[in-house]
Amino acid sequence: MRDLITSMDSTRLGFFKSILDEAGIPCFIRNETTAQLTNIFIGPLQPTLCLLNDSDYDEASALLREHQSPQFTSSEEWLCPACKESNPASFELCWKCQAPKPE
Ligand SMILES: [Zn+2]
Figure (cartoon, protein in one colour):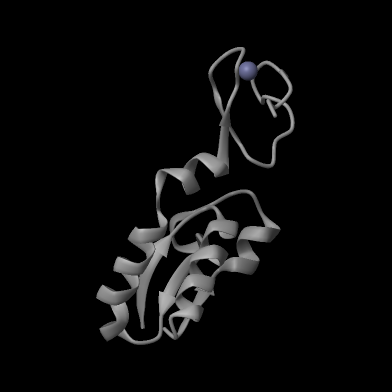
């Protein structure tokens, strides 16, 4: 078993897992439940996408690199037109100045 990616964003990990599932690479997400129960993320408890087989590591990381395109990143967050802060995609209002999310 080998850790591939650790991220506080379990939605993104789920997305990455689906990519690996499609490619037939056995993997699972560790600590996912913990992350949903608490907003406090401590190192070892962060959700981590793990590979069952160490030998899949190179192939898996190459696959995920392909999917970490700027388009994907920008769909995750939006920039507030008023104060230029970046906000998570799930926010409908800017966390800083409460300006509505642009269409
Ligand atoms: Zn703002």
